[in-house]
Length: 155
Image 1 (cartoon, rainbow, N blue to C red):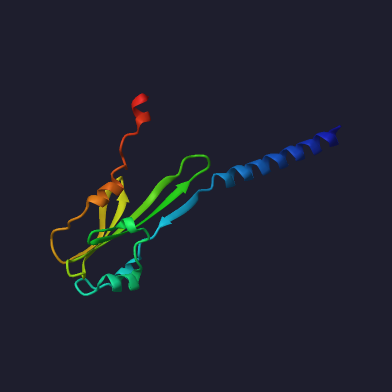
Image 2 (spheres, rainbow, N blue to C red):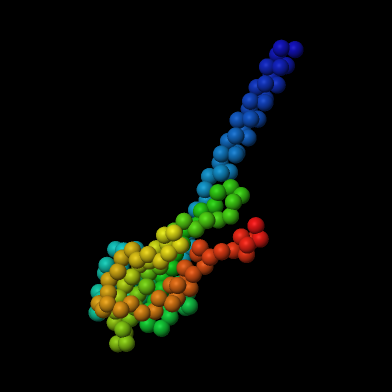
């Protein structure tokens, strides 16, 4: 009888340890990347006032989506989401690179924006003039962050 209890205890310990291993690995975060933003070392090759749309396409590529070529500005957008267990995915990083072109077709400025507490934050900026027009798309992209959800009013 003592031997049966010992074997039963060993089986229970093995089952518990296996269950614990499954639970720990199930909680490991899953990270997913979406979109593309050129790295700083590629952007450093672009010369403001000299490069054109064609040379920018050769150096860093065109934006992935035609919708991100708005007027005289190209937008490159990338984000990173993390999922833990059964919880909904959480956006942990978002980057936007805006390359603006002058009326003559040369690069006017290059800007990189990031996500920090739901606000647009300039991470780096190379501008030839002081005014930075056309932030309407950026506000649209970041506009829903921090907005109240309908379920919050019902609680």
